[in-house]
Amino acid sequence: MKKIYSLVILFFLLSGLPVMSQKQLYIGAGGTGLSTWITNQNNYGLFEMDYAMTFGLGGNFNLGYDFTKNIGLKIEVGYTKLGQNYTDNINDTAYIRHIRLDYIQLPLLFKFKTNGEVARFYLLVGPQFGFLLNAKQTYLKNDEPWEKNIKDLKENTYKISEKTITDRFSSFDVYARLDLGVDITLVQNLILNAGISINYGLMDINATDWRIPQNNYKASHSIYGGFNVGLCYVFDFGKKK
Image 1: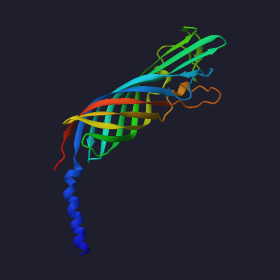
Image 2: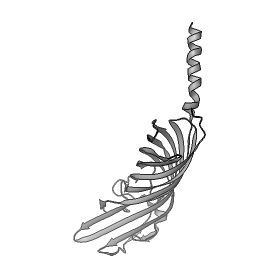
Image 3: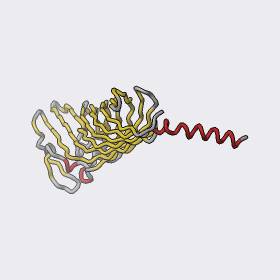
Image 4: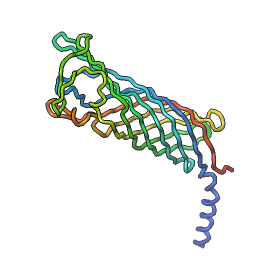
């Protein structure tokens, strides 16, 4: 009798596989409005400045594959503008510093989504690899470029307010990424996705020669998040009943 029950259960499981598999390949593009931050500011051994709100942008092309109705993988090739704004007034002197960091981003994300004919909630989680393209800054003292000289850890001398400062930052970063959102079917095979994305940089973004102590040196990390929206076209390979 137990063998019969086992065979019946196995039959129903196997008969449901075509419905549950629903393998899909999709390609798409998206954009993100970002709020960006840098922890533990590195002002080359000088005074800390007050943080100011900083906004950035991101865009990507993406490719995904759903192994089942609920589980899949997604990869992206993206571009983000990150950084941090600072401002301060010390002894009637106004200081302004804006840092801009441009990255190519390559995430590899595990995807889980709920069931639904029109709308399906999703969770994306995984590592993201960032490659620095360039770093620029505006550094002003009383609305003029600050002409102060500073030294890196190799005793090389530079103007603190140089505009292009790519060599002061690490060329590579790794992030932990989490996305939450919803996929909405607009018409057959065309999906609108919208949600929030949160990224935390795991590595020190300062180049080794620029990790200058300010009291005790602390590593600087990029943190950013925002609202993203995109469109995907779906190639459906699943068997449907």
